[in-house]
Length: 175
Picture 1: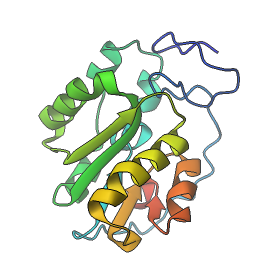
Picture 2 (picture 1 turned 45 degrees about the horizontal axis):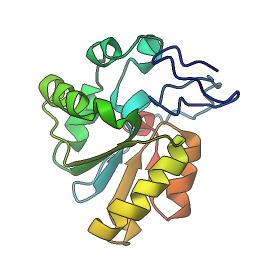
Picture 3 (picture 1 turned 180 degrees about the vertical axis):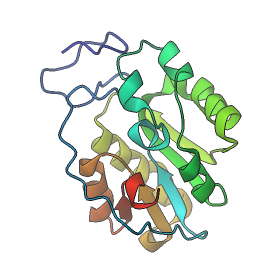
Picture 4 (picture 1 turned 135 degrees about the vertical axis):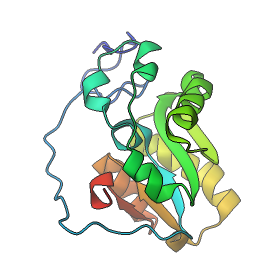
């Protein structure tokens, strides 16, 4: 399957592009939206997803070509307001070569300065985020998993975080 955003050839049935993290197969959203939104404790380390979480218009720009796709991003300012006082670690399926421009765009458009970020090097989102969790986040910040909160769009990635004992929720639980 050819990624419409970056042109990378992926294996058939890949859900996400292994080059740019673009969602290739859309699935029906079966998430329950909470009537009463949850609060985010200020002492939590936020493990933040980029596409479909921090970016509010991922669906609309999904077929835009890079780098224009990056500049067409709109962000969830309500989510930024909730996490701006937390320590924020961005872990994304987006490719590393977009990291400098992406972080600059996020800060210029939201005021959010991400504390740490980890980018894709050719893995599917759950495997990629598990890799960064084990190789960078836990060694640096410790294995008290109650101090983390993952705000994540991908249900399989949320399951992976939960397997560590990390609370993982979609943004709709908060905004």
